[in-house]
Length: 167
Image: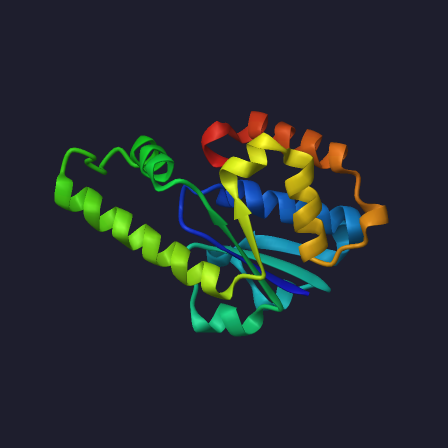
């Protein structure tokens, strides 16, 4: 399976990417899974199950994928996170702020129109197990091979290792 994780920046994309990677690795083993960001993707490295994270979805990867998942997050929190992450971004410039908001909203709408699953960032923090269960079903992974608590532990470990801003 070729899975495309197509999201706007700062919308929980790395969390979603890692969740998918861990689910596939649990279901099929690490040796069967190739997961990477689009800029590091190498066609000759592909395996039985491939996961690519992309912020600017294009036709090449849309055609390549068997499934597309995306994330949505309250635009206010995306912008707040984006301004923390990108110090050059000036939230006090109304035109710049409006332009970025409109651009991110267009990308989210475009991604949602083709997505097989929409990860709702805020819902995840209300009921993590429920959301991971929904994602697992959407990806048609064998439920009997998935340990949700282990997935949560591994996500927490990743968050602690690389920092809160990137999970």
